[in-house]
Amino acid sequence: MEGEEKAEFSASEVEYVSYGGEHHLPLIMNLVDQELSEPYSIFTYRYFVYLWPNLCFLAFHKGKCVGTVVCKMGDHRHTFRGYIAMLVVLNSYRGKGIATELVTRSIKVMMESGCEEVTLEAEVTNKGALALYGRLGFIRAKRLFRYYLNGVDAFRLKLLFPRPELNSTANPGWL
Ligand SMILES: CC(C)(COP(=O)(O)OP(=O)(O)OC[C@H]1O[C@@H](n2cnc3c(N)ncnc32)[C@H](O)[C@@H]1OP(=O)(O)O)[C@@H](O)C(=O)NCCC(=O)NCCS
Image (cartoon, rainbow, N blue to C red):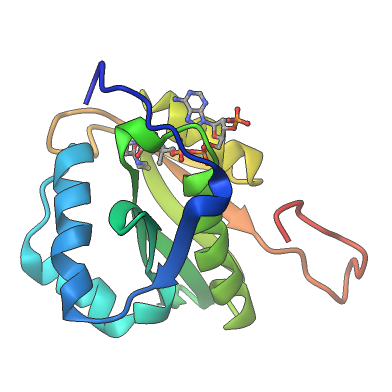
């Protein structure tokens, strides 16, 4: 929430865990409901975390859940691709690299699982998310007109993994 005081903490105090079962679900739902404009039903959350628990991570600070990422992967038009569905860090914990760490963990699992690319949508007005994903190497592939229920357009962002046989020394920076 706007105006919330920044939490005092060091990055080393933040613990990252992958989805560990039903007890994590309310923590994820609370965070996403608080911070994302799009409303999701419990069925949507369950779809993601039951099918791809290894692509879902939570960040904890002194026992409190302060960030989460929820993703999936699968076949899409002849490619095997990852999709980042939700990424949220509690307002007072932002700007310390927590989102970067969460999303990087998911992307690594996607790459190790054979994904050729990763996509997501972000509101065109969401400067923070666009900057974060831009730094990780995502490009703006498409603009989607009035994509969200609130009427805002989205950018479809895409990260293409380098093909090792074409460029064995390539390193996108987040590896
Ligand atoms: C977007 C969000 C997840 C970023 O979380 P975070 O933990 O603060 O992100 P990080 O600290 O890892 O930021 C990494 C980089 O992203 C960019 N960035 C993040 N937030 C930014 C902001 N508000 N303005 C400009 N750049 C920003 C910066 O380049 C930053 O690097 P720097 O701190 O070295 O400058 C967080 O602001 C959030 O939860 N927002 C509400 C939900 C949301 O919009 N989710 C994304 C949906 S697509």
